[in-house]
Length: 484
Image (tube, rainbow, N blue to C red; front, side, top):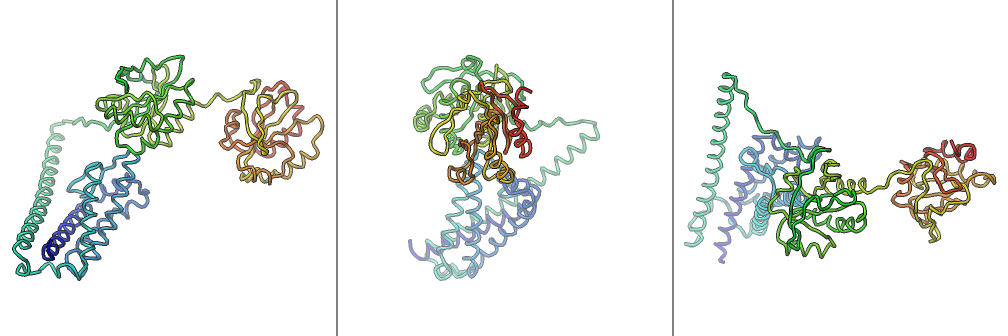
């Protein structure tokens, strides 16, 4: 490719990029309300959205203007590249999270949900901006008014073709804008006529995500990866709840959750049926099942089951119990993990319940099962070394340990944090480590410091006391309080 042709291509790139950013900037300024809404949907905090809705189109217009003169073209391309990279990252992140916000790329002129087409378009414009950056003023054409006489026949033809294409694009955008305005005026006239005639139009309401809790769960019959048909009723065994996990081919956030799905299927096999529902080819899903250790993937033909459960984005999940919707639709990884945690958490222990098997490691690497706390009274103290309330009562608690009467309960500290941090606390009593606060959750402890008494038979002998004074009071008056 000769230098003249390269110069003409660079000029085309500049003009095309300037036209795109000019139209985008004008379109956004004509619809700042829509731009503000789109910016918030992309994840920008609400208090920043109004400012971004104004500054973004101004920045796009500034880049468009700077791209036209050769002297400022490099700076216009640099600004355009920065904006395009930001757009690409924002689109990719939202797609990975399973969200499809309205792009609003060209404001009032054109707007649609983001997708692979949007991402590809921005990547292509990014490549064009890189080309203009590469053609520095010293390499590129000197100005837009470069005479055609400096070009060869090929360069002249390409340049003229580029001008025609750019001109047609601008004319097309302006024509589309005029059509939209005309449609808007037509709709206004129709609404005025309907109002005079007393006609109240019924507009379709936006569908809410998820089905109401307590409503009947829609049945289905889907093929698994072996080709066998599986129904919703086939999972209703032994009273287990069913977790329907909805994913999509090409959804990065869905693939990220598949290891969790496989683990849930193994760990909660006795209490929860985890059913992944997706689309795509059998071979592609077989590969995912093997890679992530997922079993029983069911395939929709389109999105018929997802639509029946009002799934609007993926990953999503819903809990079904006894044929009824038992939870709100959980959307996104954090919400789904929280739903599974709530669905599989054992019932809170109450006064009189026998302490179940809860093995925990101590600071020396040994293990103590709380079910073996028999033959003596024990106060379980739920602790967090970084908790300010715990720190405030530490010295009083250690003083109680040093002067503990023979008839006082033994103390077992169940703590979060590392072994090193817990050793620095200086407890004489045995300290057990519970990083995820699972034992505290079983006893109904909602925070730290808190404590509960266990009697000689290994049964819960009191309610949970929360706070330094109630805990110290329980330790000093344990004998008197057991049995109340």
